[in-house]
Length: 108
Image 1 (cartoon, helix red, strand yellow):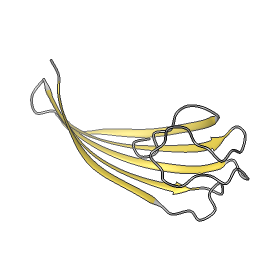
Image 2: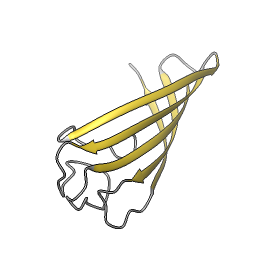
Image 3: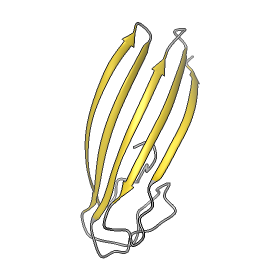
Image 4: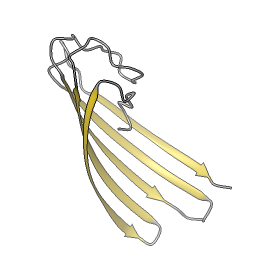
C-alpha cells in the first residue's frame, strides 16, 4: 500500500482493487490491502508506521488507497494519492494513519 509500504517479510498480504477511466487521460483507482503476519512478532520490517506490533497477535490491519491519475502529455503523469490505514489487533493502542500526497513524474 501507499502508506504502510512494508518489506515483504513474514507477511501475508491480500489485495483487491477496482479502477475506472474517468476521461481519456484521467483515472481513479481504489485498492484495498489486508496485512497479517505469518508468525506474530514485534517487528515490521521497513514500514512507514511509528508504532510497533506487540508480537501477541498476527493481525496487522488493512489499508485503503485512492489514486487519481492524470496524463496531460505523453511524458508527464500526475497522481494524487490518499491512503487510510486501520491497525489490527497486533497493536496495543491502535491509531489510524492517513496519507495524502501528489506525485509528478516525467518519463524520458
